[in-house]
Length: 147
Image (cartoon, rainbow, N blue to C red; front, side, top):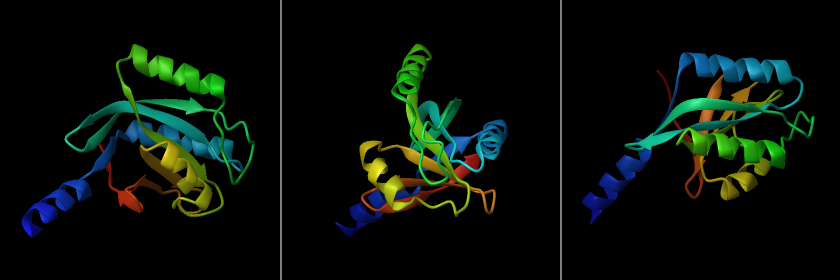
């Protein structure tokens, strides 16, 4: 039984999210332009062998205009899901920035991760780094692979 558990755990730990250098720069620029408020975006793609392959980025507006929270309007959410469907893609991730803190999910983020069980990429305004996380059932960091 331990062998099966070890094998299953290894598969979970091999999850990753793959973005291009151009997508990374787009997300970081979006975060920079939104500063001092949080920025947000929806990531479309496909999941292939435990890898979430980002194919398209849908930049959204933070209607909260807040440095510590973000909300995507219902209109933009509907537009995003319609666009994903037209492109035959899935929502594989959510991006947002933490302009004045590190790239780790806040307690508010964790609450919304329960209702949006995809990979969350967070950028830090302090270090300009991106990190990815998933709730399984605790928060685990997922490697970001730049293609």
